[in-house]
Length: 413
Ligand SMILES: Cc1cc2nc3c(=O)[nH]c(=O)nc-3n(C[C@H](O)[C@H](O)[C@H](O)COP(=O)(O)OP(=O)(O)OC[C@H]3O[C@@H](n4cnc5c(N)ncnc54)[C@H](O)[C@@H]3O)c2cc1C
Image (tube, rainbow, N blue to C red; front, side, top):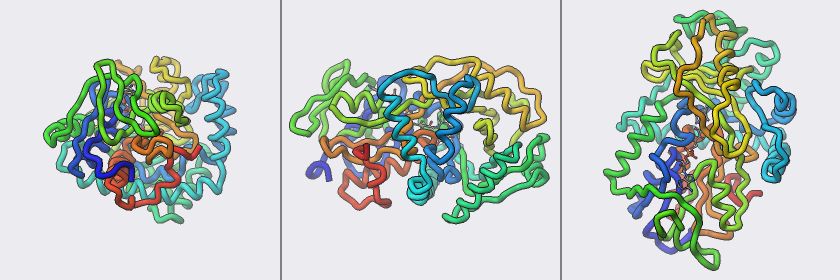
């Protein structure tokens, strides 16, 4: 599709998305170079909740989110927070988000997300010989307000409609699911088809495996591009040029600024979230869990317990706001009968690359066809990493991708 029989590919960004692109492009027999300014996998792909979530078939831009966002905007402890600022990029993103948050757009996105997530989980199983702690125990979402019960049950009904199994639980059934800790919830929904992994181990295992398979890793910072007439020739980095036939833009939240260097518009907002790990968990959970109203995720990862949450639109800023971290910690005892010690150091922050409609950008840019976008996965970047790599490899190889990628085009804005 992009160039005649491309032989070499350079991937910009070594997060879960870049690593998975490298995996499937290398399997096509291409010479693959992965360009990353830090350690691969240490960006947003590191401290996330590690959930692989077919249950998240409703994109972030859904009806009701705009009203919620506006209400939460003035609450610095809310799960979704927009740092007020008059910035054109943010204002235009919010405008597109609002336009995408309709029933029709969401219904159109749902089966696509379902198919992508099902294929990604299948690919995770295939990658299984690598040791990254893949466990398929399902995921529970708990609510403790009548309003959220309605929302969660409605979503469970939508799940059924598109063929995703979801079991609505009353308080007793929820407690049966988690016999080791006392719950204080009205009920929940259990998604048996969800999975979890250790994201740090996933990235590390992928990087080692890719090196063994002949992928070249370059520790450089990309500063710009060289090319002409809509064809990229090389990356400009702090240590010289890196050329290739095809380029994959997988630089997470920094992808928008890099696209801009080429005069391309890729509306992305970094959605900051935090996590912290209890090495000695103060309580035991058997399943990855989401606390619905608080939007807090709790994942038992090996012997550790990871607690993650918040989505803060505050620009490319990785600073840690202790008040928001504390809001995550304080949410837990509202659902579980536990006394939670202060969040242990090190606190972690990551920037989710958020597109306005909650769908990733995967595909070539019309104006620069040998540049392929692979970013914008927001809260689904781990879940969708393998299938993203697979789709990018299909596109480069000129094969019909397994899902129609029109809705994912980077030119859709
Ligand atoms: C709190 C939290 C919890 C989450 N939980 C989940 C979850 O449970 N399940 C799930 O599916 N997703 C989850 N996510 C989302 C997921 O972590 C992200 O979608 C995913 O990590 C994005 O991967 P990426 O490869 O696009 O970006 P990143 O991992 O950020 O990688 C981008 C890389 O590009 C590099 N880079 C950028 N610019 C340059 C440059 N100029 N030169 C060289 N290198 C560059 C960066 O250094 C970085 O390593 C969560 C996110 C957060 C914050």
